[in-house]
Length: 251
Image 1: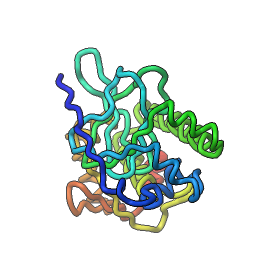
Image 2: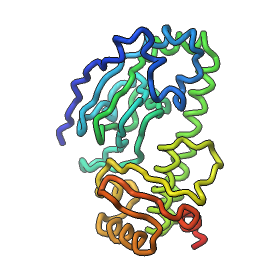
Image 3: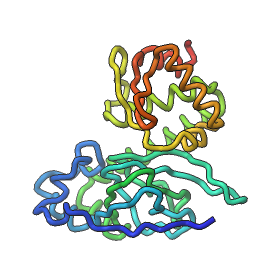
């Protein structure tokens, strides 16, 4: 299988006096641990890139020399199987910091689902920054812990949940990730429009289902008036409370 490497392009934010201060992902990124007066130092270590859809920017097995902070767009994360197939293990959007739970080499690959903007930080430079800003180190540890929790949730999703429960869980997770609600907040009583830039095949791969099952389940949820599907890349959650009950196995 041929892996296409991205040709990163430095984004225009580099021309701003304080690019990190103008980053839309900063409020919900680990970078929010840096105070405004220190953002210039953070910006000096960041290398912003644009990644085109369909391009890889992390290759499984490559030396883990950098961390990546997603500032816009969506990436799919995957593991390579011995026969060349790929298993999607997650999706990363704005605010995700990639490359934390690795040692010498990357244990996963990452490919842009849509056009993305990413800030790259080299390990040595980031290590120096962490020594001076303990709050940033704490945020990175929190992010690493969240990765572990997400992995455990994925094991539960694939091992115990039905197709309907898996899809409901996925839609709710997308909604929570996109509007960045604090942990424990409920979506009940609110209609949420969520973006699905990934293909139905990607969703099926991630959920351990066939694409036919995903399409059939979405149609059923729409018939039950739990969701609307204005376009293939957008879904509106009409009855979030019912979807939460479904995802929990209570419906």
